[in-house]
Image (cartoon, rainbow, N blue to C red; front, side):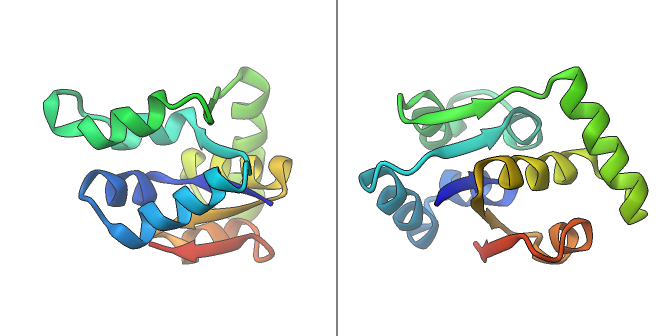
Length: 124
């Protein structure tokens, strides 16, 4: 099963959270896909030297940043509309998890499960 990282997971990586880093490392060693939706990168990235851990993760060959295409953005908007929510990036995380049959590492379990109660979320 693949692993999708949301902004909470990226922030946890940057602050050196060992539990989150361990989950990601196990997935990488097991050669599972590790995917970060592009919008999530925008939520967490602020530039500068303080993002050294995050930059290493995002630049790794085995971590894929999934682009937010026009079709993906529209699908996220439709999902938000049907769930009565407004966070398109959360919707893109859910759609990415569906597409990759993935577990999500997140600090927003409740927000993601409003969009899809079946999404598997590991708290960070």
